[in-house]
Length: 307
Length: 155
Image 1 (cartoon, rainbow over the protein chains, first blue to last red):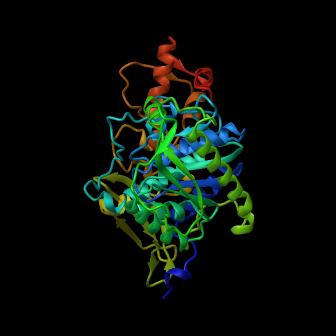
Image 2 (image 1 turned 30 degrees about the vertical axis):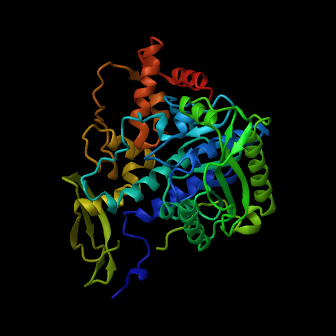
């Protein structure tokens, strides 16, 4: 009697074929993007989204073409912070146009469509058992977004990841080896411990770990024009990846994020200088090890499922 | 998943997919050698897991006209509220649109462009574009309205 592997095809359901086709269309859609960088942590509340947006701003100020995918579908924050809440998704003849900030950063965020008073909800007859399918559904949606929107020619596409060390690894699997990772921590032993787990988990895969950024590294007091300590933690993070910079907390920056008017990079402030430094370190790190020298060189996401 | 006709030792072929009923799909396979037919009846969880991949089950030619995204979208927007509506190819013609409190018509060209939007967010995008049109006194969404929206939002 024939076994599963003796049979070519699946008799007509085309499930695997469609999944492979989906991935090919994602690859095509991202062909004009030079670097894919996922900003994650594992820990929640460390400022991944804020850092992603302002790092994008610092990169944009250097004349680079930047877009952000707010991959946190359940807790999207980029739409509010970037000022694209209520922006429409407008279809073109082939692709969907990407909402843009006033300084030209493309931003996809579910927060543009879903009011903050509502939760992301998928209709299902299997209600009450969402743990069995929800992650798959969310990744399918991410794939649909990546192949539907017009990313065009970009220098960097930043993915703002949701919290959770296991989720970070799932995104690494889904996005594939072409995507490099930048992790965010804060000067807290608890946060560093979680980020260390993310580093350990990501190290087992094929994604490049560019390094980490220590966010909330003190706070910037505008009255004193000085950085003051925010946490009483030892200086060394102990993380086995390069530190690309430290960024102090700036209450003014947080206020602008709430209002949806992201601060233009101001190189005359400690935060502006810190973000510019991280941007330079990030670019240096990406250029040091171009993807073609690190991975397969193919513009593809993930791995094709085995048949 | 593959099915094998044991007496013939021959892979069975998908014959038809019945519309989802209470979360269950009925997928009929037949043996090309002896003609034996069998039906795979899924429970809601099995159906949902496959649906979560964003794929459609059914003969490709049944939906070739609209393409995968288009067929899924039509089924998903049929107004049936069935969560598995997007899994099978849409029937030819007779598409019902969700009821709208204020009638804003879409030209065929604008509808075709709307199909480029991911299925899950399409209803929300449609609502937003119709609101944009109404705010400008338009009772029809055409490609000019879509272009105006792109320009308005600096895209």
